[in-house]
Image (tube, rainbow, N blue to C red; front, side, top):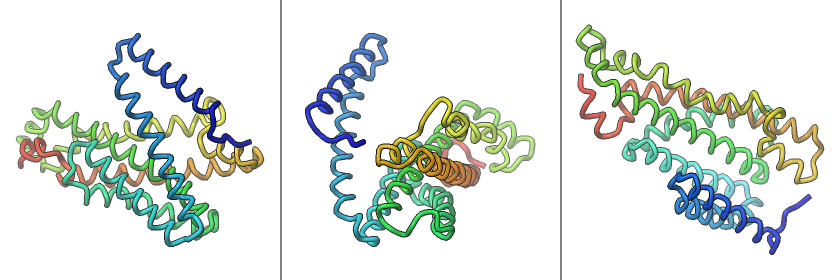
Length: 252
């Protein structure tokens, strides 16, 4: 089964966008305009991505270059989302700490071949989920530090070091960033049929092949997110990735 560009797809896209906009207006979410912008951006970016992938997938080195570009964009995006764009080197370290070991395992085990056609989709999925967990951990930890600044100062007054005082506040927030993905893993095949499964099925693969690919991707996501969340938490404790307001507020 394939889905090709054409009038049926165009009509479906317009109808789906109208549903999103009308729902935002009816329920007063206030996100109608943002939904249109997000949809147009997604369509444009995926069109460009399709053209780029078509051009580079035949060369492993061009494919690697494309993946590096995707990684750089993920780092810049998550750095902005957590309100600390200048901390992009630390965001790079946290995300790389999660992605690289997983990629090494996948390649050395022979699970995926060292070819662009295999690397780009698998690494792309892993990168997206790594970026998501980095953003969730950062935003929730920083919100907690702002809300509980008095607790931080109280911990310092009791003799705790800054890193220990920060940990007292963020320790329970970090796991929250992992819960959405864990829920997705636990409900795969029961509540949801994730992207890799659908992709293999649409590509003509068997249900068994689709399930195998999806389990592999889910395990890879769990691994990279667990490492990235842990490294990001350590960087927050060390006050490396803090936004400007928290760097000024959380003094020793």
